[in-house]
Image 1 (cartoon, helix red, strand yellow):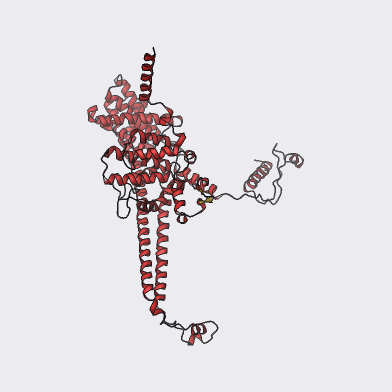
Image 2: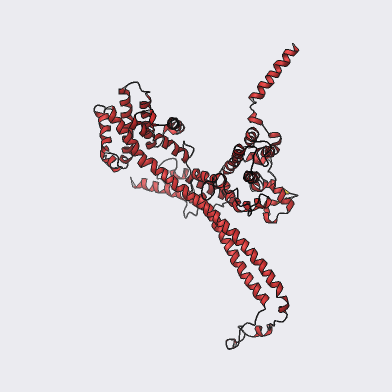
Length: 584
């Protein structure tokens, strides 16, 4: 570059940097934007002067900053994939790996009917993933496994026309698989290397590379050799791709479960600490009441205490500065205050540690794993110490959590912070939790039928209470403060502990349909499911939920999404034909 070009480039970079930082610029930079001319006369006509004044930035709303952070975390934790979640990916991978057994036994009888259906479903599922993805691109190891399993399925199933067709299909799948693995390593090299040396670095058997070479440049290998190579290649991909990916997801899931279990244990300690502090307060009141009579006999010389032991008395060090004896009541009060401070500090530490586990859960756990773990932990159980069929939202101790309003408040106090954080951090979690709670109610009714035992009644009671909470004003008042107005008072600005009984009942009532519809809750679908598959006559069951949801929907209730019922349509048509025949 000439010196003139360097100067012009420097001026352009200087302008871009000054414009970006919007700060003070010591000089006014004048450059030509229409043409690259160095003369000052030409630059005057196309100059751009950067102002030296500060730009006043408007204050940013805290909610906007929080939403920006949430979107940034979503971008780092999630990415668009053609598969639903990691569990669908693992299921399809396990089904594709069944092709090794087909090649080993060369017969369909080695797989059960269920396994054959799984393998065929997995092949169709990968086809759908390729259609969903951009230009049909999926991970190379996944596509190679799919191609090899597809050829093996057609081989054993007898779908191919001839032996030559099978040999060409096997050879093409092996060549594409080997070349794809080698191309990844070839791109990062300054000089080209042989495919054999590159595949040796990743542990691919050398004879597979030889088969690839023979199929590409010489005669096609025989069909038994190609079948053995396909089975070996699938085993290699299982060992190097599918198993490590499944183990990583399993470890991540276990770490997520541990975080939720620690949250639960910390909340239990918090409850124990609060109960202990309450007992100590009661004990202090009893002790203080018994010492009222002895208080009058105790003496306390305030003047002596004020004259000695202060900075005004230069001989205070030589004086007797010992405090006068205190009454028993004063000692009890001081001890009670000290214990209260310790209990408050322990409670505060327990609360902070519980919220810390939730924040780590939201920050570090991927969304697909977090959704599955959180819903299993809260609703379905089977993870941690929760038994299968009963999540932590359904407490197991009738003594500590009775099936009453008191028990609902206790369990809600424990897990409400967790639900609030998850609903704010993960879009759609509140909707998923609501759907799973309704599913659990319907599954209980389908299992027990009309003979509902006490355990099932207890489960239905708590599940229904959580459904009502997810649709209440208390939960949605943060997003729509208008629904928190009660007698011209904004309850959203008031702490829930200070709500009166009437205000508490108002906040527990369901939110208006406009608010829930704006939040995209599937109320019509859930109402249809409760009406269509529920059992009538069960307390806190699907029938009560259908009535509750119908009251929220009001005039906006639409059965079956507006699609007419087939049986009702047939009956109406039959009645119309009968009436027509009678009239004729």
